[in-house]
Length: 328
Ligand code: UDP
Image (cartoon, rainbow, N blue to C red; front, side):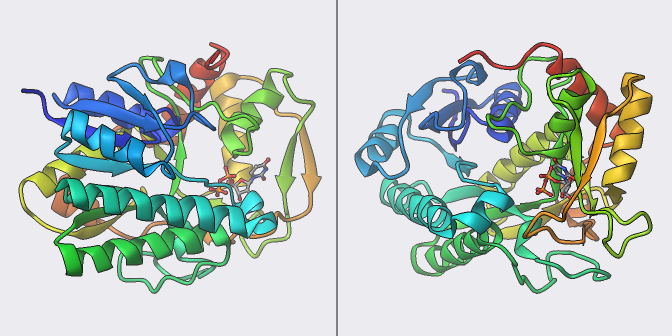
């Protein structure tokens, strides 16, 4: 029988790519999603259970029906700007939603969880090499809520034998190279899709948030990872747990930082089009630079990123962008 994996947030950007990778690896990805930010059209690789993490009965029913061997937990609110304006929304959705899920999983005897955490749990530590042992000092409620869930998973590990692979992602970009799924947020807040909107006239311009950061060109630096490479890491994470290798934290980044201006410059090359720009204020909650300094995912999990270079990430995103995204 095909082994099921319950994928919360499977209708979202990263979750949908993970579902494709799971399907390709022979698992049945069962999406559990309330479709508040996800898309029905993104659920293409397995069944959809439309449900909310606050609905314990719906969670219990999904565990009972599909008997998943593991959970991948993506469902979350993830926007730094929104988290700064409305922290309560982040604590409620992310922390309480995860608590419900973890309790339901433990009760169902499903003790292997792959969790989407973030480099935003490190906060602003310019000049520090960020790896799994770096102290976490989040500076916004998004990062704080994710760190709290990491702590929650550790507590349920100690008390109930829960095993968790925690992935701290750096910046996720690109789209499925076969064009089946891609990034489509409404409203959009991320750099690359906004830049592509500005390039093809869907928006008047891209606003660069701050040009006075202490970086070589004054703009923030981020480490961008291709979403399909990230999805591959998640399948490796499930297999790691099912092989009995136990709880582990992995950073998922390339180790190369790109400034906002460098990303813009690369997109000019890839699309052969100009990017209309406006220079604006810093965005509250943004760290100066976030770049992974870890090789653990490569050495221990055997993760080999294939498309995490700026040319492929922008090229795949550009092709997906031109399809117009999901309809429903
Ligand atoms: N950014 C920008 N203009 C935008 C959106 C983002 O200059 O319209 C910058 C942002 O300040 C950050 C980088 O691009 O330095 C990546 O931001 P994004 O929102 O894509 O991801 P985050 O780093 O917040 O996860």
